[in-house]
Amino acid sequence: MNTLLRSLAIAATLLAPVAMAAPTTAEPTYHYSVIDYPGAANTALYAINARGAYVGAMKDTTGAHHAVHGHGGQLAVLNPNGPIGRAVESWAFTTNVLGEIGGTYVDAAGSTHGFIYRPGGRVDTIDLPGAKVTQVYGLNDRGQFIGLYDDANGQTHAYANVDGQFQTIDLPNGVATIPLSINDSGQIAGEFIATANTVGYGFLRYPDGHVTLHSAPDAPPEQTLYISINNRRQVLGTWFDGDGNPHNFVRQHGRHVPFNLPDSFGAVYVAAETINDQGDIVGVFFDSNFVAHGFLADRPLPVNH
Image (cartoon, rainbow, N blue to C red; front, side, top):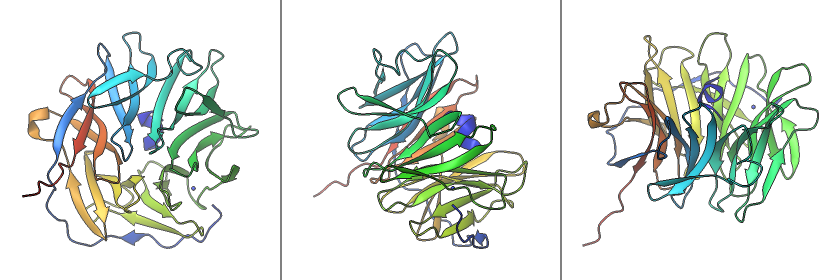
């Protein structure tokens, strides 16, 4: 999903918003890397799986976006000779431990489709029946996936595909529901905008349809979003202060741990995008020239003595 769409889930019982008042703890130790596609004007990483493979998009010098994937500091264009490679534009937003990759592409006619790329090169185009636009944002190891679609009237809705069946999962009484991540338990994390011109709340949707809304402890009202949930139920999110500055965090067991890049990166804006089961985080940052770069923050393995 492009970054704007990610920043924009369910006829279910909607509980009152939950204000998180748990204490903030110290930041963990990471090893940080900048990961750029060679020669690209901009690069963003959107997801990382449990094996350390990551996906994202790069913008070429003509301004077109292309889905990329990689491991170990390297990036390559995804499926360059297949339907994604021939697309006008494409973005890879999610990947699972099987090496499957989900995202969005725009064809030569200007239509927007979701896709799931299978190891070996097969690409399944994802079009929700009757939809004008379909996008894939999250994919788990069980083959369940989530995203957004536009109906025949151009209205945007959240969906989940479980056991091959699409279901609309919009939260009631809101402006927008954006599901961004699904773990292997079927828990969905995302952004719920209840009031126009706000960021909204982070939401968690459970397999039984139960939903909770959340705000980070220091966040102004309706200025929090959740963007990723892993199989350890760690949640990656962001809240925005009164000046519009983002504050990334990892939430686990009610504790909120801030996440940022070192000052040496010279970042003026940092968007953390996915946390994997090892606690590694990928995302995108902008430097002082407003050039976008992908980053990886991986947790070093403990040394046994």
